[in-house]
Figure: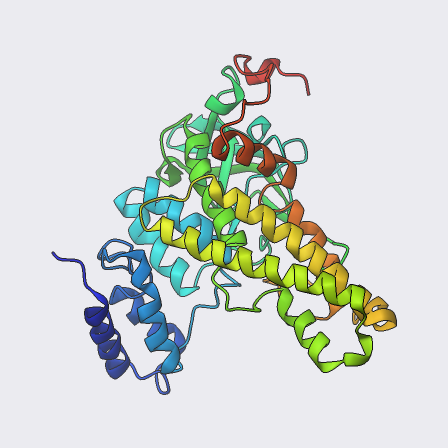
Length: 395
């Protein structure tokens, strides 16, 4: 079967709109029909929401749907599923797993979270201690995870756990899909500097996961996790935005609308950050074009680094520009939101929330190492745990 071109995708999209008019079709039903038509993510395989088309043609479909005011799947709410779980399931899942999970994931019927980081294994993720022990056709999981976005609303989780403590830390990990509604899964909120609890800690006590929900081979979970992590960094740092989208947008609007706040020094700093934000945006476009050739590589770590630094510098400048108004904070009410909204909130929220950007999705220090070693080809840092069994490591 020949992959469809842009004209064919436009035709298919218009057929979808004619058969399921957005104005009179239930939004969820429309999204299901879009998935079944292969117009969800066109580069995915036929039958899994795609048409084996080039990734670069997805904007053709999106533009037609946007012009018709068709509903979207609220990507901010299901970003972990779209950006991390889906490409990992596609790359390592069985046919049954792909058929079971990808459609409700994309439609937004099932929210996903990521059970990776632990209190003693954040930057050094491979040192994780959550255990999974085989018991017949199940794995029994015990441990604790932390900094888990959306765990309080998630139905499913991508989980890595140690299945063999007698080998070096990178080789004794396996990758699972965990049902967050199962007995033994406890989610507790972690209140953040913003006053909200978007993150959580998750306790796993005797949680039974069928072996049929394992992704990849036993002991090869680190390899599977690399696919998740590389896609995570691209989804965080390389999302498609228009010019003056993202954090630079609100401060640019304030600059134009409130000339009384302007000073020469602030002008120069804003110009510098505006240019850097535009460079980062265009670099993200280039990175997405490279994805057409395959899975994301370590370059996504560079994009995520730039995203964190720019967000923090821009939000800091915005607070400074606003003067006394920048010190105000609208609401400290304890909430458990289902997504992050940088541009729809006030400057104080942006300033506080952006502090987490250099931690979530891989700390900036770890990402600097990845860029140095895997992009620039610099010598790797010396390691004294390479051939040591995980159980013999100092903790």
